[in-house]
Image 1 (cartoon, rainbow, N blue to C red):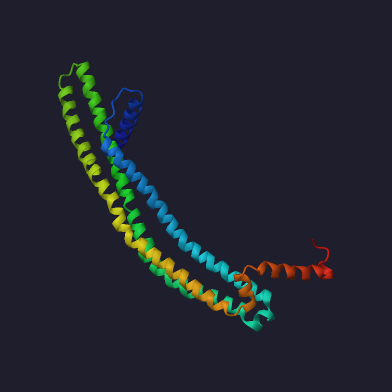
Image 2: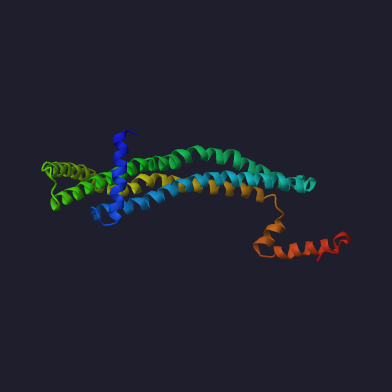
Length: 262
């Protein structure tokens, strides 16, 4: 940082302190403040959307990975019994196909149509924030010069050139502030209004991708269902599966090695 830049930072920090003590009057623009609050709300929501969109893809991978571990464990648990009717092997294959084909097929389109557009939208925020910070600095410079002119007007200096020079610097500071203030007050609402038409295609793609995943998962699990015992399916549909489970538990408790279990 240059010496001139350092001095500006010190002067601006001093101005902020004097504003808090009431020695410098702060310039207020209600229109800008309103739009800035709207922008901050959108910025927070967009950044959260970006994080959640990435989390969704990570969750799908984690879910299918967990399904694979469950399928492998069930297949090992069933052993030869599962191999005879094919149910455990069928479930394991269905989950493997879901992971290998569906998730991998959705990964690329999801990144292209959902993640990347959202990330590009969020990439504008640092530039906007830099402009907002620059406006704040120009406002501090302007307010400091106004306070200086006011002081010189109330208590004239021996050097009669100080007041005209300060007034000129104040006008220059005012112009620099107003140009940036007008630009932000005009363009921030435009950015906010563009969020919906920009994100609409990504939202549509998200719904379609979720639909495809759910449909694929349902289709593959439906194929496994044919290997399940017909009585089991009927009892489940009629809400009688609990009775069957309890009957098996009774048989287990009847075993001498499990008779002591309450």
